[in-house]
Image 1 (tube, rainbow, N blue to C red):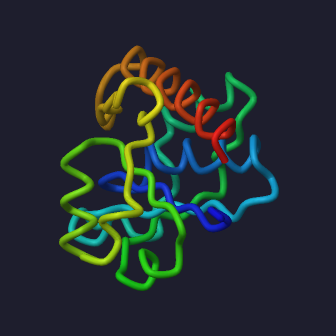
Image 2: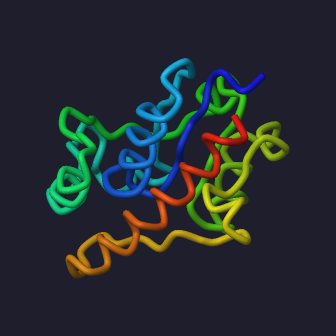
Length: 146
């Protein structure tokens, strides 16, 4: 049912690439990709994942290298069966881009009591570690549901 999964955050360089790769590892039979709500606005299109996100993921046996940030589009929303976002306000942002996607847009932290995953961009190593932990717990729960 959910064969094409899109993971979304703001810039597509910290949270969503990490969650994308983690889901790819856990559910290899599904197509998982990622994009950002404001990647274009932030001039991040084509950028690699944040160096701290790559480092923290690597310490946890997850490879986020080779990522290239993409701007979320209506077509991406249409072509994916499930859209996982980091914060409740991202649900509205995705809906602004693609109103028809509202019903298939849920929090990555859905199964962790609707936990929102904060943006660690330009924050401490500890912030990145905390976010990685939340992403890891969330994708574990999603992998059981999918």
